[in-house]
Image (tube, rainbow, N blue to C red; front, side, top):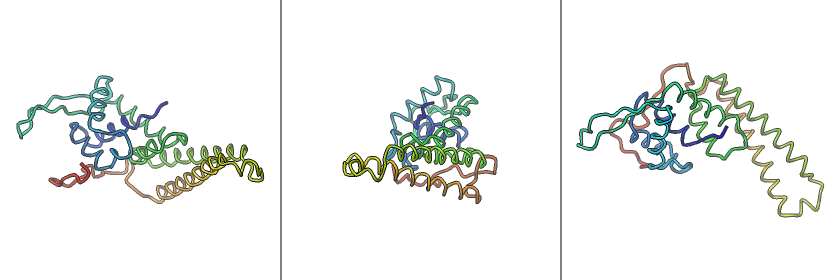
Amino acid sequence: MAVSVMRMLVLCAVRQHGRTHGYQVRQDLEFWGAHEWSNAKPGSIYHALKQMAKEGLLLAYETGPSTAGGPPRTEYEVTATGDDAYLALVRESLRRHDEKIEVLTAGVGCIVDLPRSEAVALLRERVTALEGWRAEVDQYWTPDDDEFRGDHIGEIMRLWVHNAVTSAEWTRGLIDRLEAGAYVMAGEGERVVNVLPEGERNPFS
């Protein structure tokens, strides 16, 4: 299953509001900094909303003109199918160790939409996969092999091993924090959904 960061982020933003318009989604994603570490640019956000509405992942509602006299806005709501698709994306983003960093970044941003026990189990899968990946790299990179160590290609192997070790370490830390009760996870109560106080300008827009 390919993990679409854009779909995950847009569905996450719509889902947390219940029903909202594209500008609010854009404001949320910009406040999260998603425009810096993903392809969540304004045009891509609106395109994703329209495309997912066509696919039945979102319901689209035409609303009246804005109070400022602008054109009617379209508001969106996640369907049951969209909800299933969203949660599947979050799960894959957390368990997969071989995706780009923005996939994990988006997944961590959405992790609170999973039950605590499930999030921990998925992260444990990630640790196991990272440990297996490191073992595979170690199998082909023998530190006593002077010829390989002396070649600059050896730096690639060092980079891979370093990334596997540090990523597994960070993941274990997140597991510990979750098991200690960090964050309000799915089914544990209400969470604040407004990323900006009423009337405050988004500093990242």
